[in-house]
Structures are given as structure tokens and as C-alpha cells.
Length: 113
Image (cartoon, rainbow, N blue to C red; front, top):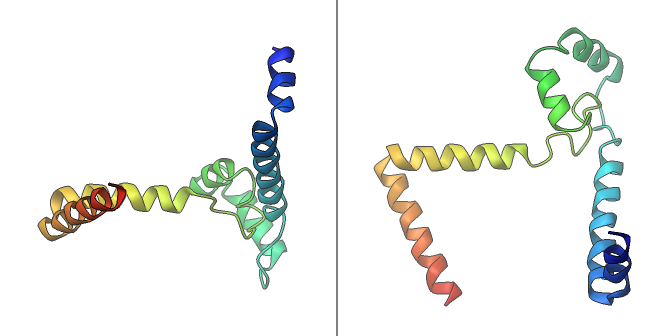
């Protein structure tokens, strides 16, 4: 296992990609500690402790503790994923939205060719 890691680090392309990923992880973790300006942190801590077992506690666990600090990266990618799922489900129900989704797929396929 260590031999594989050493070989991966010796390859300049893989090393560059690993360093980029590590840099993004460090950037994200630092952003999780920067609180949104204008937030009363004392009131926020009291509210988070009061509702630790509810939905806010679950969101805090998913966001890696960033939600309880109300950081600038608190929601992570969760809103995008939720919105994507909702739009796909609505596309099955609303005919005009389904038409727009199919039209978007056709444009995407024509651009990739």
C-alpha cells in the first residue's frame, strides 16, 4: 500500500492533483470557521444547544459542524443537491418543465458533439 502511495506521489501529474485537492480541503475547512458577519454568536449557540436533536442538529452533522457556527460555508453543497432533486421530481409532474428539461438535454448533447 505504501509503495503505491509513493509511486503516486512520484508522478508529477498525480502529485499536482493531490496537492490541489488538499488545498481545496484546507480552504473549505478554514471557511467553515469564518462566521457570517452580523450574527449574534451567543444567541446562535443557545439556539443550537436547545434544538440539537432536531433537524438543525442533523444539518449541523451533515455540514461538519459549520452550521452551528453559521459559517460562510455552512450549507456546503446540500442546497444544490436538494434543488436538483426537486427540479427532477417536478419535471415528471409539470409538463412545461418536462419540455424545458428535454430541450436542455438536446442542447447539451449538440454542444458536446
